[in-house]
Image (cartoon, rainbow, N blue to C red):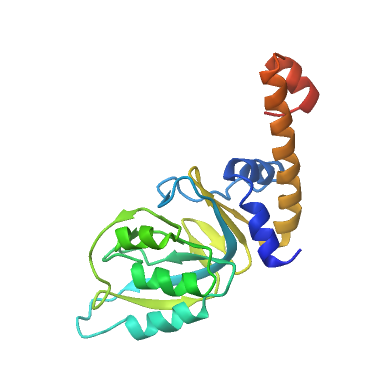
Length: 217
């Protein structure tokens, strides 16, 4: 499977199905914090993780924008940026121009452990972001990038380039890179079984009968 096909097939699933498969395989802490909420609750986004890290930097003479442009230029197609702006939340961690640049590069969405700004314009652009809230404070003179493309620990979970990130209205789940195709196939089978279960329940069968047949719910 090529990367785009994998992303598109994950986007036909939902986070609960993928999280259940990861649980069954012994990976029980692959969901990010429930505080991450999508700009578009009705839309799923899936892509290969591109980790990035920043930190608070209280130098009013420092302009972080040239370094941000370098970071944005490195974001690959079919990616989901997973961005930890640092422990101190001193400013908005993502804005409109950043969203437009990575969208134009083929990025499929962003997950950020912090607030964003220019939210109305990002919504108009139709770009999916999972964030913790909104805040108009600029990063200039308050914050700087540290690195991108290298592993980070995001909300206690190690994120590496190539992990698969799927987000929807329920939250965000991360599939370790070596298991991306294996989990995809298993989750697709689970999704098909669940559709059959719903059809049988609508036809009047009891939950006990359906569970005995499929062994799950």
